[in-house]
Length: 127
Image (cartoon, rainbow, N blue to C red):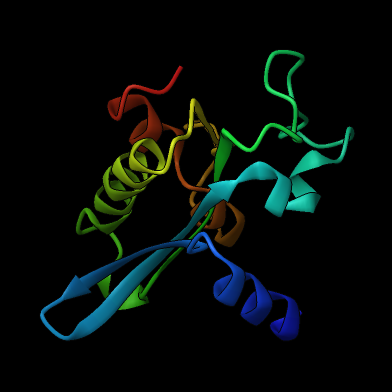
């Protein structure tokens, strides 16, 4: 997996956005063309491509994986990462940015933190 990720970083586009507090990286969000995230295109997952947004369309992007350092959780890093991802996607020519966040009724879990909470996406204007 590491070799595939390193190849993707070299090939581009960058596979995500980073959040910094001064010189310390405090968070990361994987964002890019959904075709580069094969597990998102499985028809048995909530992230199955929609008819008007095929996985092969390089302008259909996905915000798929958050990581925020434990000591920085609950401080707005997830929202800042998503804001940065939206700008990055637009500047890179994305026509659509998709996500599959955890619904608000679920309790906080490692999986919920991984895909992001629904409320952060709703505040950013996702439908």
